[in-house]
Image (cartoon, rainbow, N blue to C red; front, side):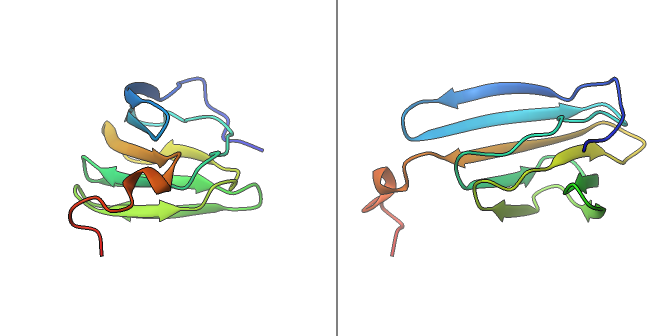
Length: 109
């Protein structure tokens, strides 16, 4: 299942190596990512205020988020994401491919 929309969200990969993938997503009003899942745990950081509609295959979750807000999901969760706002929306998605690569990084406990 997915949202019915002909406007795709625009991904811009900023970093993609053996350890991490960082992608900026830009959504026009009503734009969608398309049905997908992630192979790694990931974090999302909003760059703009807006409403993300998340379709999990059974129901749509309406998430009102603000710039700077973040959330995290585990790998393997199938979903589709739509901009439910009446204005453009953007976020940064950080997929962690190799968590061990960051062990011992300054600032880690």
